[in-house]
Image 1: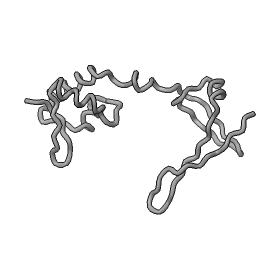
Image 2: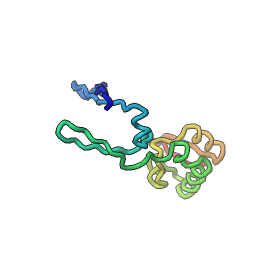
Image 3: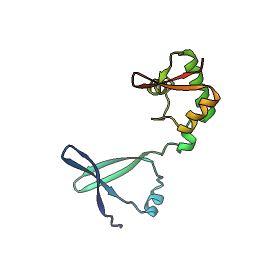
Image 4: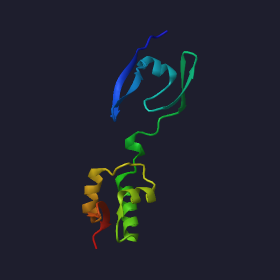
Length: 133
C-alpha cells in the first residue's frame, strides 16, 4: 500500500477570497501498473472517506499529432477568407472551421502573411483577418 500526501496549492484570488486546488502525486510505477498515461481522462467518485479514480478515456493525441498540419490549416483559412472578402475575426474563423486551437499559432500566422497574403487589421477594436486584394 502506498501513502500519498494531499497538497494544497494557491490557484487564484477572486475579490477578497483566495481559492486553492488540491494535488495528489501518484507515483510513476502506480500509473504504469494501471496502464494510464498523462492526460488520460479520469472520473472520480467519493464515498465514506474514500476517493475512487477510474480512467474513462485514453489521452487524446499529442498536440503535435492532433494539430491540423500547417498546409491544411493555411488552405482552409485561405478558402474561407476568399469567400469573405470583408474579413473575419479569429473567433469567427475558429467557429466556422471547427478548429481546436483557442488561439492561432503565431508562427503559422506570420507564415500565412507571406504564403497567402494574410492581412490582420484592427476594426472597431477587433482584429479582422483578410487577404490582400
